[in-house]
Length: 403
Ligand code: ADP
Image (cartoon, rainbow, N blue to C red; front, side, top):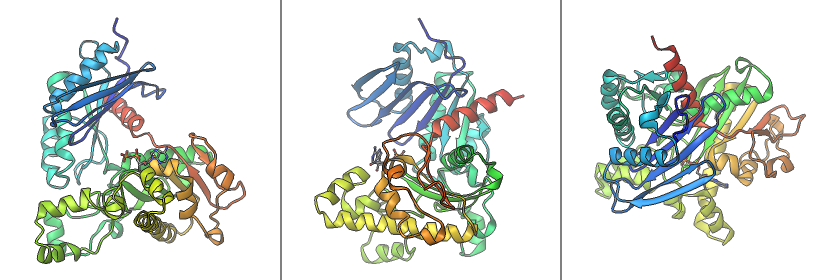
């Protein structure tokens, strides 16, 4: 018996070698099924799916994204969710780069597909993979509405002074060079949840949000709209990340070309895969970094110090840009789960009204919560992000509003 899926949204995050998915109810946030296909295009890939308290794991060779999605649909059907015959209300796709063109969730048609393809020059590692997911769904679920939700969209209206790079203006205009910002779906969702938790209207609040996961970014949000963010033309700028360096002197690139004879692909690889915590300490996962630190590894300690230093640099910058801050919010894998890091980032800032309550900070509590003392002028919060829910809600709304 197939379970009713026509009210559910299938959310797809299609990466270069993986497809993460959730089948969920956008009203309640209930996740019926979640799963991931990994190692697409490699000798041995596989799928892992959680549905109704059961986990299924299967290994096989997955040639490409379409084969991966076929496996997703077969595995969903085996769990009782036949989305091919039973249908879903919509498919929501995370799309990394929306360029200047896309700044709200968008119903996908051939024109939109062509525009996302054109934006691949701005996000060569991400947009083609997102597109592979979209085109596979077109083939396998014809007739089901698909909606693209862009990681850059929230930051579309960044003030000119924040989004402009000080390079030759003609070159910047010709090649679309500006700060776009990423993780926008998360920053928007978390800033909205923070306002809810504080019982205030978003329009009344100044917030600094730290999304610290494998990728990491910060945003300064005034009255519900971002006024600055750390990621830029690409997701390389800003904070130190698992395997990306964040801010660098751009002079490093020509220096490496001249002295180390690195070519453009090697530099791309160095900056996207072999830098950040991985470059400094050999591991990109924060838990592993902490294990190394506990064992006295000095390179890991330095990596941690560099990471914290960068977060504090942006905290200071955004405090000044906002003028006054009501809430500082931590989210994503590291931000939600690492009390030591939160304490180190906010250490010694009582004179700015910023303080945390050690017991609240270290409490084993996974829900959204305040971790500053009740009387502290600045609310510090941990707010779990839920990009999938935000995408599912956006997709459902676009489908409901379509002519
Ligand atoms: P992404 O979605 O960007 O891949 P996540 O938001 O899942 O990343 O964050 C991954 C990071 O969060 C890893 O560095 C991991 O070590 C850290 N992390 C995840 N869960 C925990 C946890 N329970 N305790 C400490 N760190 C965690």
